[in-house]
Amino acid sequence: MIKKMSPSENEFDIPAKNCYRMVILGSTKVGKTAIVSRFLNGRFEEQYTPTIEDFHRKLYSIKGDVYQLDILDTSGNHPFPAMRRLSILTGDVFILVFSLDNRESFHEVQRLKQQIYETKSCLKNKTKENVDVPLVICGNKGDREFYREVQREEIEQLIAGDEQCAYFEISAKRNTNVDQMFQRLFTLAKLPNEMSPDLHRKVSVQYCDTSRRGSACMLCSRELLYRIPTLFCSVRALCDVAYRLHVLSYNICLVEC
Image (tube, rainbow, N blue to C red; front, top):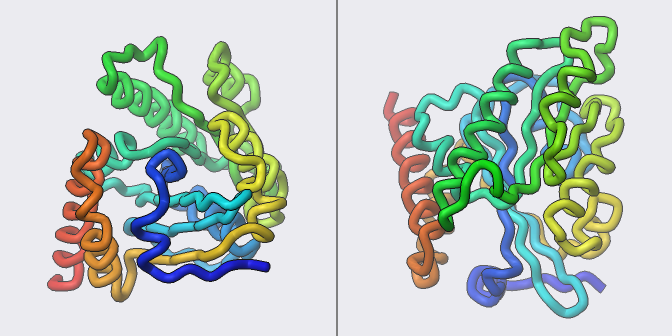
């Protein structure tokens, strides 16, 4: 039986070691939101809607323990570089998405991969050579093979020698290789097998969509207030606060304009 939890349970009782953040990065119109939608509910929306910053939360009940997966679907425009840096600092696992029919989007993924390693190397006295970041690169829109602009050899060169980085060619539209991609990412991150796409719909106890559209400011601020008592215990937590406040101010500016 799936257990439903009250807000107090899912906000205060999940140990930090059971909380993970997945960050999806890439250029505009490469299918980031479509991939997230496939993961969360198995759907694909034909109509394109630009993403500002969407935040989703998935909770799992696994062998008596509760696990929390936060999913940050970022904007491809990244109007504020500091926001992207903060999203990288607070991320645990990453999906970098480019479109197989758009060469420039592949170049953006190359830049993002380098930025992730450079940013993460600032933590715990690491270097770019020993940063351990579970990361999957996705070549989306495999259904448009005829218009392909990026060759597999180029992509394999990008991930060569990096055991924590994998590559998948997928189609969010046709739901091709999407589940396999998430399975590989979770394996790299050593997350419980039950969180993989073919099982997570059976064990998930709650799904909270706090996408930053419409009532975004209210949802984001409420979530921040819930977490303030436990936020100030690490560098990552401080970055989390700064990031959320930055997004709040950005959305307020959009509403006022």
